[in-house]
Length: 102
Image 1 (cartoon, rainbow, N blue to C red):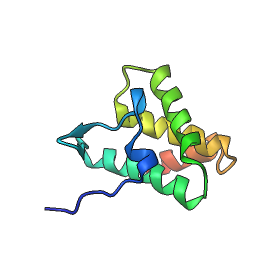
Image 2: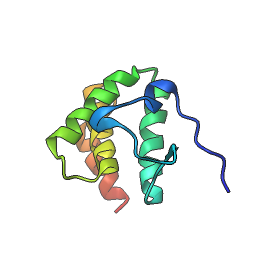
Image 3: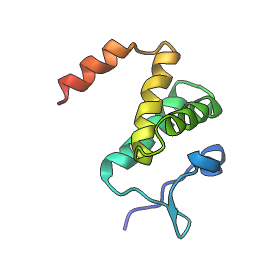
């Protein structure tokens, strides 16, 4: 059994539509890519020294824009929009990387 993921309080305590899915208090990922999407967002925000709440607001917007979209797909959409808004990458750079891996 793997060690549990340690999540910072600002992330762990998200509520409302951005609240993390849990089962018995543990984070739930239905597929490996969901955990990678979560980790990429958490890692990018931390590595770039950005505010978690700024990403959280982007996530809330992504969920609200498409409430039927699967939860972690909204994390991917929010992360893409976040890095574009922060000037870290352009939409065309993200599209080029996505097509290079498909």
